[in-house]
Image (cartoon, rainbow, N blue to C red):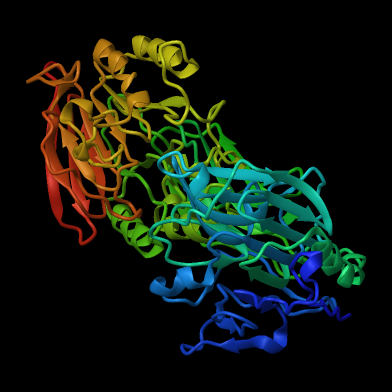
Amino acid sequence: MKTILLTLSLLSPAMAHDATPDPLLFYKFTPRLLEQDDAGSKPRLKPQFGPPLQLSTPPLVNQSNQVGLRFTRIREAHRIEAPAQKVASYLPETEFTLSAWVTIDTPQQWGGIFSAVEDNGEKEAGLVLGYDEKRPFVGLSTKGADDGDGKMTYLKGESSYTVGKWHHLVATYDGSELTLYFDGKPAASTTEQSGSIHWPDDLQSIWLGGYRDSNENFPHEGRLGLFKLFDHCATASWVAKQYAAGEELAQSEIEGPVPTPPGMIVKPYLQWVRQNEATIMWETAHPCKGILHWGYGSDCDQRIVEEEARTIHEITLTGLEPEMLYYYYTETPTESSPILTDVSTFQTATKPGSPIAFTVFCDTQSNPHIVNQLAEAAWEYRPNFLIIGGDLVTTGKNKSHWTEHFFPNMDPIISRVPFYPVLGNHEQNAEYYYDYMHLPEPEYFYTFVQGDIQFFMIDSNKSLAPDSEQYQWLDEQLAASDSTWKIAVHHHPPHSSDDDYGNDWKRPIKEATNGDRNARQLTTLYDKHGVDIVWTGHIHSYERTWLLREGQPVEKDGTLYLITGGAGGGLERFGPYRPIFQRQIRTGHHFSYVTCFGGELDVKAYDLEGKLFDHFTLRKEGEK
């Protein structure tokens, strides 16, 4: 089926006979316009107007006679190939019309069709056309509504889209009114924005098929048919005629989900390994009753079969022996031959009084090759377990960031030892986190003991005020703990000399936050109950404080605060001054290796090349 979309005048009825203005950008998503780039790795789409469009991945082979190009399981939006200095020339100054024919296969909170935007904290600038789990939206920031660092207005329609159905999305702006159209009809409008468009100061790229800015990446899954961007505001009649020209397309048969061939999506990994139990999880592309083979030897002479077919498999072994080595592998049935994984091992948790070793990673959110290199290096130390202090992925609501980044690159270690995570801001409290983790309820905070250490795992994205759920729970748990060592883990650092918190170094030092104020509320409990170490990430660097009490350095009876945020995220630097709490800092990717036995706790920090750059030992008198 082919549909010809007519090019009609965008101008007012009085100017209906004037020439139609050329679009700034115009792309027809059709196989005949695809070509390979110079490297021959990724295809690009020839434009009607504007630069070529670099596709992040090849489209699916068209087997349904549908028009457009269909994309699935992509990791990034498609980038318009314009040098950074020329990006602005393809963007309107005041008026605009965005017009797109699309299908949506995967509803998501921040789905995107067009992105030239920065919406990061209070910094809001640019333009985005997209959709949420049910409805289309347009987001716009203008200079007339600027509150100092930009202000975005998100305008949503009332009508819901249908998954797999062709829809026509249009957004227009005339300098004073922003209007969203859905399938040829006005869906919503606002006059909250006015004046020229407030584009991001450092905008490097324009993206199609995704909501994309400096720290968010939500690729579009579905078909892209036709996209146009004008620097004129279209009339309602123009939008209606554009929809009417493609109405046959809109009435075409709804396209079903992309068939998924049987296979392994996430290899087996370990969760919640205790003295007498262990959970093995993995994910398959097709629902089936997974089989776990396990035992004391590599022959794995025992087996457990799941009772129900599922895609995320979760089998818990109980009645195990403490500090014992076990072997396991998984079997995934298919219509042909089963998928068998390699034999791996795990060791059950240590008892109090036994020595332990563990590694600490924080912010594994990007740079997959670095994450994999650190995972390989950490496994060389044969730790009992792994602590991950948040920001496991770049975008928690993007499934591919879990399945194509975190799990495959952490596999060298998480298939052999369990990891105990906390939520970072990049997880976005997404359901994927809770689907992939097997932790005590409510999963966003919990405690566990290994050897002579009790760990207290906290979600610092939520309120940590004295009347909060986690604050009161932590107070009770710390008071009841009889472990020799107490370690708290949460993502945001109470103390940091990095400039990440509002560029403190640019303001009077008396106004500096020097860390996360929400997390700092817990320091009262850390002082009260004698917490030994608080381990955090968020800042993509390494920092160790002096022992602190009431925020001041002390020679003994204080808490040590450690930032170990260099497991993959883009590196950050420190402010140009030395706060009183700072003792050791380091910029570079890294992880920590910890051993503990009785009254001695030893910490080493290694960089990407395996070089030791920090080492300290804490001791407690009278402990064995």
